Length: 142
View (cartoon, one colour):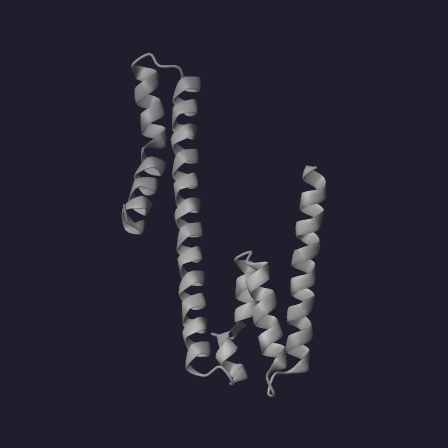
């Protein structure tokens, strides 16, 4: 189902909610059951929307990742190759929870001649924050 169809279903459900409750009351179905069923359908619709949104966002991130990798393969000595739409490949990898790859990319970027020191420091700080979060999460699970 595409986004327009999902939105259409949500609009129809929102419009039909009071009508369905009234019809159910006329047929002898209690309002509590009507509200419960319609609430469950609404939660299902919201969950579907959120999952589709997350998947779409993840696809965009993966396409940016591939674009950045292609740029780096094309010109590995250019520090600007490590950026896609203003975002550094290392930051993108951290957002995708790929800390080891991000660490390698940040180290390669730091060795380049034209890399800015402020960008390198910011990327290393983001990497260390991600590693601390991981250690805290692992410590909390034990």
